[in-house]
Amino acid sequence: MMRIGLAYLKGSVPAFEDFGNLPTDIVKENGLVKGEPAHKVLDGLIIPGGSIIESGSISSDFAREVKKISKDGFIIGICSGFQVLGEKTNIGRRSPYPIKREGLGLLNVNFEPMINNDRVEASVVGESFMTKGLVGTNIIGFHCHTYGAIKGDAKPIFYSKIKRSDYKDNPQEILSGVCNDEGNIVGTLIHGCLDYNPRLVENILKFLDANETDKKKILKLNSLLIKKIKSELAIDTNIKVPDKKREPGCPLMIMIASTGSGSGKTFITTGIAGALRKRGFKVGVLKVGPDVRDIVPALYLIKEKMEEYSSIRIAKLGWMPLEHVLKKLKDSTYDIVIIEGVMSSVTGMLNEKTPYSSAEIAFAADIPVILVSNCSKGGIESAALDIVAHGKLMKKLGIEIGGVILNRVYDDRIFLKASDFIKHTLDCDFIYKLPKVDISERGGTPEIEIKLEDFSLTALKTIEENINLSKICSVARKPSFRGYIPIKVLEGKFKHSL
Image 1 (cartoon, rainbow, N blue to C red):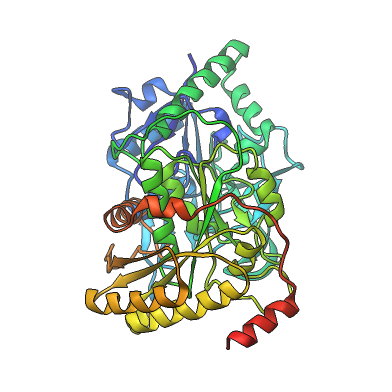
Image 2 (cartoon, one colour):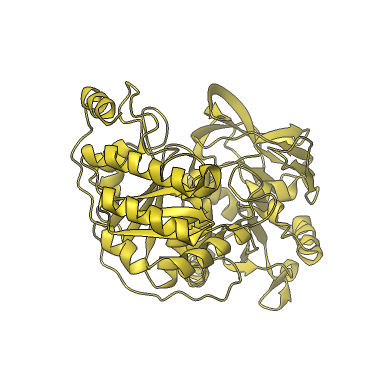
């Protein structure tokens, strides 16, 4: 029987994509598959993305098994899994000096910081076991990486056409996939390459000499594997989630928006998504704008895929217009969808391109908003004033402010006074506070060497200890697209508020 492994390591995202429905078994840090060394039972191994390098999840046992599998079988590394197969990755994006983490050295490449979150078309430029006969054709997928500048002399097999890098328009072709000299080890930055391009999957099955019976067995085992993976919150937590049957339908929606970058939207979105999933809700998570890296911690916890509609387009930035996103969700099996806003909820509101802000997205679909502000920058008083200023403007635009969360609160007495002021002014359903939480010196945001395990589980614990999830759910409601606010109206309301 043919068996294909999927690395199941802390910091990996084994449910981020379907991997062509090929994996049949999970491989943990000890390098074992159901008690046996992986190389003795597997024909190949897929190492998914995530924060495997940053999290330091590669044990000597796992590394040994990967190297043994590579001698007779195949290895595919995607994004962070690609970094695992390479030589070194410089994860010091915001550091004044390089911070190098070593991979297994199976592919002669090094990685430097370069952010890209585009949906991409890539040219196939070299043959490997996976791309045999496809040179000169194109494949599709998406990027979601912080360390995407590849240096080295491994054989190129993919070049992706990207529109932006490091937050700037910069159309170019970048190296996005390589293989070893023998062609049985492949690394790529392209997520979804096995899901959107069936010819790649066909080549893998041909490499294994799989017949129709083999293919049916692989699909059957894969369906059982997916069910097992999704039955647990995060990786190796032993936190089981209830399995409930659902009928397709439009889910409830809510937006986590804020008064500015660094307020804690990603942390709060992650914690709420995880806490709801832990209670049996099927949760979807979307991002306003292109930076889908922000929702990876939530997807890590709840084991949901990055979908083609996960990024809501603002102007020309992002993947899919809101009205198309809503159509996609109309017959989904999600109970609730959480949308993480971008920057301040009103950032971009006066741009001539519409929509360009989280507030406009919330208005257009009639989505209630939970406003977040960080108290550690200007104090609790400033955070309260920011919340009220943003909230009053959004209410004038016809946006419901369902609740408020003050993040990193350091004084309960001052919070109570600020809370009274906010409640009196905005008349929202709830005002919660979150304490200051120190995850680590580095790795506290997707921007700086995030450690998915630490970040996600800390967010879950913090939300469960400080927020009533029933209140969150009571604010959410089904969306209804009502169009975008004309720029003249936005300008008028903005000036009036000032």
